[in-house]
Amino acid sequence: MKVVIADKFEQSGIDGLREAGCEVLYEPDLKDAALADAIRKTGAEALVVRGTKVGSDVLDAGHLSLIVRAGAGYNTIDVAGASARGIYVSNCPGKNAIAVAELAFALILALDRRVPDNVAELRAGRWNKKEFSNAKGLYGRTLALLGIGSIGQEMIRRAAGFGMNIVVWSRRCDGEDRPMTEREARDMGIEPALRTVRIDVAPTPGDAAARADVLSVHVALAPETKGLLNAAVLNRLKPGTIVVNTARGEVVDSQALAAAIRQKQLRVGLDVFANEPASAVGEIHDDLVALPEVYGTHHIGASTEQAQEAIAAETVRIIRSFKETGRVPNVVNLATRTPATHMLVVRHRDRPGVLAHVFNNLRQDNLNVQETENIVFAGAQAAVARINLDGAPSAALCDRIKAANADILDLQVVSL
Image (cartoon, rainbow, N blue to C red; front, side):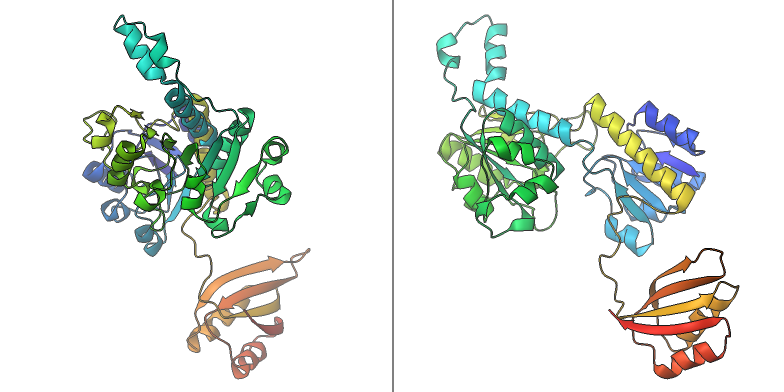
């Protein structure tokens, strides 16, 4: 299998792919037309990217079967276009969660203790203990989390260590106002945190914000989360609240945030911006970064050696699985529910041509196969095929299928 890697990638991952029998082209600066040209010339079946955009020009350039986002978010990939072309899109969820949570807490602590300003004053030769002794501290204060996926869960573990109270809002429990249950905490692996601090579920993002001393955003970018942190939510914050965003720049209304900083004296930590440079080095034009109340970092949340090694290992696992079994872990663009309305269950002798006979008869009645699996019994004498269809096979069709092939033992139609 030929693999093109079009972003910075760990050497351990490159070595792992080669050990798996892949031919690897590592060109971390490939972009746009150059990337499409590389896909065309190499005939690559798999593409690995981080921040590189993958559009229709790349999708149409060759014979890609798999695109792996070496990270969690995949908003830079034309997922709908890949789906229309039958190309798998996979990602590496959770592998950078600890790294992002660590940076989020670094920003929280830096904002509370004004660490960058301390450093700047000292480097300028000025000692101002009186100014920088004014910090609130984190113990006993409330951390509000928008999003409790893998990163949000790591935030909960760390907040518990700091003795913070926690309130969460998530799309999965939107509209609910209650304490988090032990079962929920156990399912997320954060039950130990629940034993030491209170974790409440807020019904809306605004309700979570209203209770926050620190508000941290950890939602994926999607149409329903774009601009999630808007004026209505920001207006419910208390004066002096710390706000941190290490998710995506687009989930925050930048103009509303700038206004809230002025009106409510917010202190803000941002690792992501709506208009980031396309390359790793360049100029950034964002009014927020110039505000003295804002501490910014360079979209480095996932950029630790530990996180990158974990992501590289997961990428290798995904591609190796596809190469050896045809199965792709972590696929993000498979239908959660197909148009299938009925299942045809065919018990048959495991002989050549049986399923071809069934499919040919289904085609004649204009029934489309949505999904199928064929399970073979021990000894390879018999099997059961489960065939999901977009319509109901008639009794006459079933009789015709069974009568014309003696290797079909039984037919059953199940409504889905």
